[in-house]
Image 1 (cartoon, one colour):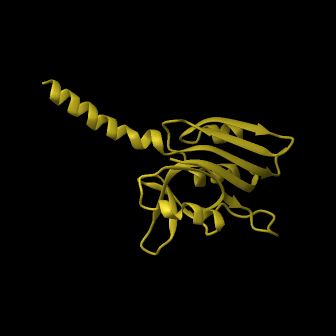
Image 2 (image 1 turned 60 degrees about the vertical axis):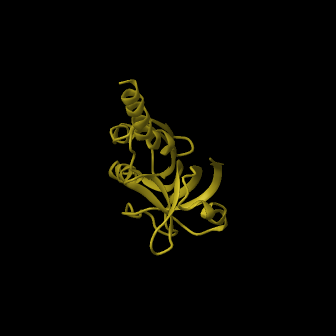
Length: 35
Length: 132
């Protein structure tokens, strides 16, 4: 039973890695015509 | 414009500086933000974008035509424009290594008063901040 839980935890961990690793962190724009 | 941008998917915070015409967009940690949609939202609010810079973390990938791209997620990537800095990350293509890159995604064409929002963006690397 514990082995199954550990295996599930391991698989879930892998599922979340790409989300935490890759992302757009910041966007900066220079705009014209703003009042 | 600030409210218009704040309503876009994946946006956490928008800071607008009227003095120097700068707009800072902070994406949500778990959200998927689309720079093309942001550009369109700015144009829709009647303002023209001169330049858009992005800091992003992702993997370097190479497509069948040997073009390099920064892959943010399985369904979001930006084609990378060739320059000297691209050469420093080219060897990472196809590897699980993650890089943090600051680059220019959009620059208004010279001579045009108001250019239309582009459909696709190309990333010109300005700085490779981190290789992991």
